[in-house]
Image (cartoon, rainbow, N blue to C red; front, side, top):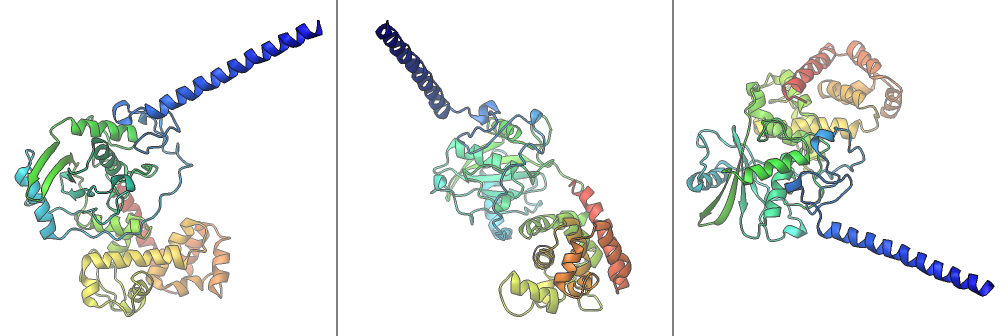
Length: 421
C-alpha cells in the first residue's frame, strides 16, 4: 500500500512540474513575441504604461488619460550647457535657397521673413545614427523647415526626430537623431505654436506621433536634389503669436540662454525691461551698458571669469551687441541664482535675492540677514518668502533697489502671461 502511494505521489508531482514548466515556457514565448513585435506608437498611438518601444519612448499613454504629473519619477535630463548660436545669414540663405528652389511647397515670403534658428550639426549623433547627418532646423514666422540629408536616413529615424522636435523643451540643444528616451515632462518649446491636424496643441507623445504620421502622409514633405546631395524637407506650420515687438525680437536668444543658464525667460525679459526699456545702447549714470545694463568691471568681469573662463572684462562693443548682452546678463543671473546663492533652499527666496542682488550687489543684500555670507544664508533658510521680501523691500539701504524689486516682480508676472508660462 505504501509503495502504491509513493508511486502515485511521484506521478502527481511529475505532472504538476510539467504543468508549471509548460506555463513558464508559454509565458516566455509570449514575452518574446512582445519584444519582437512591440507595438509601433507611430501607427497605434499608445503603449502600455512602462513599456519601451523601438523608438526609446518610455511609458506612453494616450493624451486623454495623461496628466502633467503622471511622470514624476522620470529622471532629469542631462543639461548639455551647449551654447547654440544662430546660423549666419549666408548659411541660412544657402539652406533656404535650396529649399525654396527645389521644393514643391515653396516657403511663403521666405525672402522677407528672416529665419532665426538654427543648425544642430554640432551635436554628436547617437551610435545608432552614426553616419547620418543631423537635421537642420530653420524657424520662420509661419513655419518650421526641417531638412534631413537622405543618405542613411530610415523612416523610423525621420519619425523619431520629428517627434522629438515637437516634444522637446530645448530642441536646439538636443540631438534630434538620438534614440534615448524622449522626455516630455516639461512643456514643449513649440507648445501652442505647432497645432495638430485638429488644430490642438501638441503636448504628449501620442499627439506628436499621430501628427508626424499626418505630415508625412501629406504634402508637407518633399524630396530635394541638388549639387550637395539628396534631402528630405519637412514643412511644419507655425501659429503666429501676437507678441510685443521686444519679445518677438529677442525671444529666441532669451529662450536659448535662459535654458542654458537655468533662469526663467520671464525673469530675463523683466530685468531687460526694467533696466533699459529694451534700448540696446542704454548707458546709466554708473556706466552700466546695454539691454541688461551690465557693468564691465563687476558683472561683466564675473561672467568672463566663471562662464567664459578668460581674464579681463568686456568692452563697450561687447556689451552693446544685443545677443552678447543678453547672453552675459542671463549668465550673471544664473551665477547669482545657481552659484552665489546655491545655499538658499527655497527657490522663491533665491529669486527675490537674485533680483535685489542684480541691482544692488550681492554683499549689500546678504548683510541685511547676517554679518557673514554663511550666517546670512542660514538665517534666510529659516525665513518665509514673505519675510525675505519685506526685509528687501523696506530695509535695504538703497531706495533704488527697494523699488527695483517691485518693478521686476510686476514685469515678470506680465511676461509669464505673455509667454503663456
